Image 1 (spheres, rainbow, N blue to C red):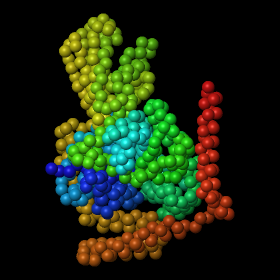
Image 2 (image 1 turned 45 degrees about the horizontal axis):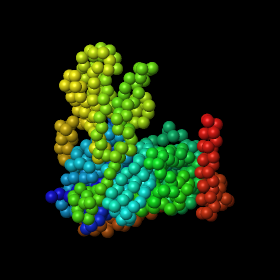
Image 3 (image 1 turned 90 degrees about the vertical axis):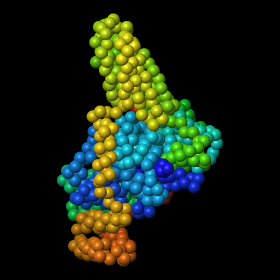
Image 4 (image 1 turned 90 degrees about the horizontal axis):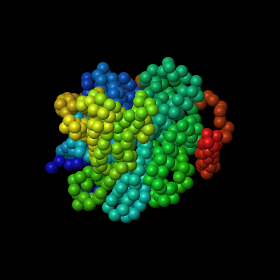
Length: 608
């Protein structure tokens, strides 16, 4: 029997776990690391690079490399890489295939099934796209789990606390989910969820990048894709540096630009104010939906790499009036929870009695006639948001007009009063006999399973006709035949072999450094090291490991030089007035958050 693994398919990084030796264990990749960047690059010879090597190629080969495609799962977005078009689910399939191969190498046995996590606020099309990505990658995907639910599962499995109410704040590279979870006995019950699928750590990178371009008076329109990629990489590094230090330097050193900017945590609060405002909305919505106050929460659990940012933690504490937040391996918790879920699915003795209940994150329904304004139909809700899953509910409707020739059942997802303001998921059409209004009954049943996949069944008793629809956007989705065809194609695709991955990474790293510097001396040294490394790769495998180590040290030193040697010409803040003791700086940031609250209150009073 093959093993089941759990996969956290992330926007920025992905990782896998397995239930083993009585616990959920992370699976290392070819570099011995747990995090695999969710980046795919296509080589000139058609070789597919996934992960760390592909991430290096973002700067050197931007037209052949893609990242952050998870944000567009279930949409019509296409990526042109090396002259070929790829959908977000196909690129995700490359990442999943890589994780599956790493798992098979680690476990020494086949892996044919996976539990994959998705943001709680993923719509049905995105969930179906995730399942298809798994199938294309050669995995059976019977279980999709919401990311905050997986985090709660991992947290409860670790703490083994019998009764607790958890607020799970899951803030990753590309998405934000907030969940209110109640734990009792062996049951983990999701009470309410909310989120923002277009808010994550990458938005902080983008804000810092824009601030740098604005402050340095750089024309964004004239920048090449390579230069833009280098600026974004530097912004990301700056953000990460600010998780450890109160101030950091953003250095951009390439052919077009040699500039440096100093930035503090307080600067980030000001630069990214719109992001903080968006961050607070899902928290208040979850507490309102669950009918819970902040002081009734047992634990505030922070999950996702973006929760490492001190200003994020401080803002959440400010909103909730709490400082007792748990940050337990934020990068790993979702994958560990997926590993627990895999163990439950394998019926492992340690966890087989654990029960995880989930909820419907959105309301689901159909449009109905608006007599006052027929052009703007109302939304009729069949399944309300935060309904426990699985659920099946039926509603009865009738023809709205005399002699109506057909019934169109249009399916929507969302909370708006007017149907057109919600997301349209699909449609079923029926011919009906021409009769007076209200005489032709139509029964609509929605069945929403534990994976968050919607099935719609409609029957017209007067005609005996019945139709069933599993929601998949026909313009975006693939038929079973098309999925099978893609699976065969992926089996033939040449993915960079694991035993060559470290070597390929070294080569791509060196090429990116060469492109980034404009120092003739450094470039000469880089060429020498790259040529020698390639020679050893081909002719002296016995010494390859030692040469790889020395080359890595050399490239790391060059990376450090490129991040330091530009002189900071501006005299702004050069007198040291920027420095604040940690307590004083935190008080200043708290004062800023309070000022936002006061402004919001004043705005509300003016509206009232």
